[in-house]
Length: 593
Ligand SMILES: Nc1ncnc2c1ncn2[C@@H]1O[C@H](COP(=O)(O)OP(=O)(O)OP(=O)(O)O)[C@@H](O)[C@H]1O
Image (tube, rainbow, N blue to C red; front, side, top):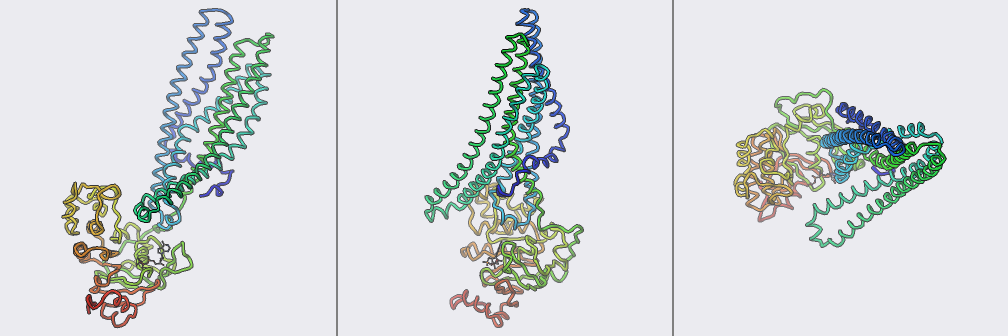
């Protein structure tokens, strides 16, 4: 979201929905508010203590009364200290608790969102919402809000006490209040706008750095280090520029408030001092008055400072709540149907047209009609960009087609529960994803309830057990980002073991054996054969040699199915298939007939 999208009037009110996150802890919040009220009252009563100390102690010249007055003051201050401890603890606890809950809610929301959402929104920006934005809210609930409330209470109480103590001086103070409010309004608004720009500039930085770190080898092999340093430097400087403007406005805000409030106090001291000299008020009254005036001034200053923070948090809150409001485009229907027991047709595509949301004008799939029988091996072949992967994406309901329907065992997949549908399918992608965790975790991802024995058994069937045993710590070795490096074929076999453990009815293979050497290919192919056994299998075949024995080969081109048949029939009937074969097979390596 850009700063432009946020309407100024949404400022503080956009924090309101946070209340629903505080609700579960309403007793903690109520107790914290009660303590806050009591300490604010106690704070104010210190002023009376000051008056008592001056008038009864110093002016009256009585040692006894001075001791008594100081004693009461110490008790008061002790109570304030205890109250402050409780307030601080409860409020901070609430802040941490609420931000933890918001973080969880945001993450829970993100994992269910439709994949196309992530194409439109950069991961760096989402990360910054999870971390920076929630941290801002934590400081709001945990401290800024209580500071604002406490200061408001002290401000009101202080003004009342001022009125009680001396009307004329109070009017002087009150006349100065609008003077302090004007800069708060002007600068506060600017601060809020700039802070939002700042947030999104920081999100840009982290996205940029994340991408470079992820692709560091490409950067180094093209020797683009200097260029990337410059570009990143540019991004950082841009963020600094925005931050600088924001700092300037905030500094102006604070300086103006301090100057104006303390200027007013000086004026008041002068007027009050004159009154004491002329006997119109006691020294204690002036002491108490100054005490209250300082409290009022600091409250106004605190509110001014916190107001800017509240505005920043309002931006964060509106971004987070916007994210929480997004409905996944892929949803379960209210009453999902049970997936039928095995039928003759495992999967069928009926007149399916599909356009990616980012390319609404060009069909990625057009008029797809396809029947895939139970237990058969079906290969999808065709030039790059033909729509093979897209077919897999639709099957798993990462996207829904705009026209036509897809059936799984005779049931429209939109009417099945997403969990049942995805449970029935196992995907082995071309570039398997490993998590930064050990081998156990990575294989067990296919079935979190699997025992160690079952994991090892799956690894053996995937021809992965031997190389896993040779890793530095065997099955306990860390894979993924920070872990040991695995070869493409090894990663593929871990992914196959994962799929074996999932034991799906329908297997989706994005075959990647073309990238492997003969030895790895042999192992991966053997593992795949083990996996395909007794299942309905769809293979995206990049190398025709591996699928010549498929029960059905589907030839795709430009989003359409242009021919279907066996290797032999297609060799006779499909020009495109012939051409693909000619490109891949030669005399030394002839096509099987
Ligand atoms: N997320 C996406 N958003 C927009 N267009 C996409 C997206 N993914 C794929 N496409 C486009 O859809 C078309 C089909 O792509 P798809 O990945 O299904 O082809 P493919 O046959 O699997 O190709 P390859 O063999 O190279 O993997 C292509 O034109 C591609 O550019």
